[in-house]
Length: 536
Image (cartoon, rainbow, N blue to C red; front, side, top):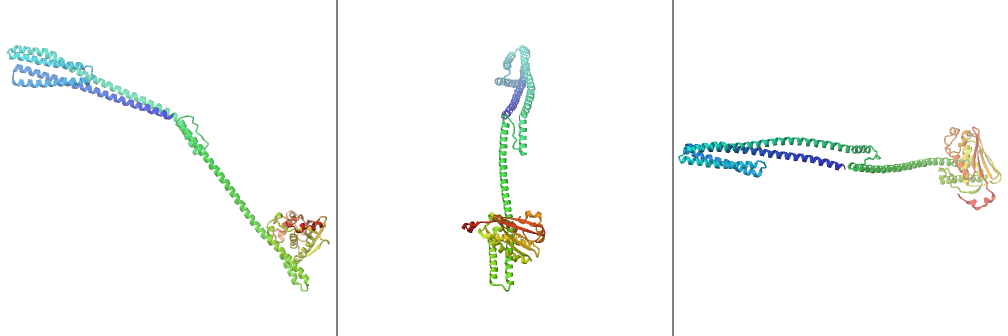
């Protein structure tokens, strides 16, 4: 549509230019035509004047020859006659030639005048010849009269009016050509002015029309480009026209839509990449946390190792020192001491082979060797080991137990470890000269082992957290700095693995009592092979 309007403007403008060109061409051709007609009129005027001069000169020469009859005059007559007929022939030729090319309406009159001049000259030659015969016949007077009559009637009465009429006609033709030329110049002037004004008005109107036609779409396109450049890819150009601007706006909107789709894909890709980076970062954090946890478990493991190995090593060293100090001991006493040392060494080996227990606090991950055992015998053996540790701290140990066996189902080494933890804490946190009392009782279907010391006790506010891993009460921290807070949590784990429970009562600066309660088994259960050799 816009191209059509622009094409119309171009065609009309070209029409105006073509019209002006044709008008100028027509005007120039008319100017040239009238100029040629004017020139032809002036040339004819010159030819008539020459004819008049040559005619009068010839007439004068003939008259002089008739009057004087001199040979010189005869030569002048022939010369003037030749020039006269030459001028006449030129006039005749020009008139005949112009008759085929000129379109002036008085052309027949001009040819008629040429014919009259020819006839007059022929007649004048006849008259002059008649006068010449009269002179030759001696009739001089009659010859003079005839010559005077010819001069008055023919030359002055006929020839001169013909010359004047011809000259006046040519003057009129030149004047008419000049007048038409002036009119043509004025007409060309006004045609140029009117055509220029019309072209200017058309161009101005067409320019305003075209400007109004594409100003709105241009503004819309510029606004669209500004919006897209600012990042607003949702913007669309609203143009309902079906011209080139509407086509351009449609393609512009399509480009913006494709850019928006591409940007959304990039945004989605970036979001997915950020999500993957976040996931990888989370995995790295989790791996880092796992590494930290593993490092903490390693540290805890080393602490557990040092804590768990310290007590058996102390007892082994104490047993060996007691044996070495004795001088009057029999063989059975040495064997008993060596058996206890061997048992403690085996327990150390079990600690080393079961490192997972020292690294984890969950009993579900522990390995136990379940069997039926006599808790009274186990407690009695543990008390003998307590006495070795108690001697180093100037403490005394007593055992109050039942007379018959106390059958339970459990892991002998784990329960011995439990008793070692309680006994070691009692020895370490008791004041020198104090006493440790171990009591074994049965109550219905349960057996309980209580261990009471006369140590620093536990503050009331710390009793609820005493079984938490790495927790130590304030008075324990002030008393000793070599503890890690691992023994009591492990004692609780062992007790819960055996289906029992552990409790504590304490008075600060007076002492503490730890009580471990375990379920009993009947004699029938004890005789069951599965119970005697099962492992969990």
